[in-house]
Length: 200
Image (cartoon, rainbow, N blue to C red; front, top):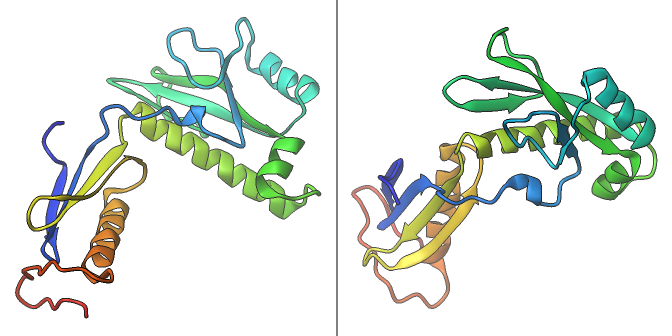
């Protein structure tokens, strides 16, 4: 594991954040949406649809697969790869590579609903955007491991596969420490930094 990207002491414990060197592809998880693409060089989703332009692919998804919510996938490649559902400003290093879509059944199963109301469809759009954002973080390597150790260097918790901001991960780490120092029956006496008081 490389050099930590963040380390801090909190209530006598150490919180360390590193990049996850072997994260799982989030497209292998249980997702509401399905990503299809036509990229020869990269795998941008669950299925490669060869020899289809954007219009043909859209027609296939709507007419033959029952897509109810469908969003385009745009990729920017320049010293790395990033993906999102809105176009990039660069005309030379970016372009559309496919779609992410959800069927009526996908939405019903995921949101436990029956009717496709405006509110439900808006929520489905939001979920698809979040799925693409998570996949983007995965292909950019922005997935983390957090390790929390006590004052003796003993592991309290180590968890990988974290997505999101480092700030949010730190909050989770501090919650783990708060639980650890206040758990019933603890015999560990922690040295607190000046101005901090242990919970009783």
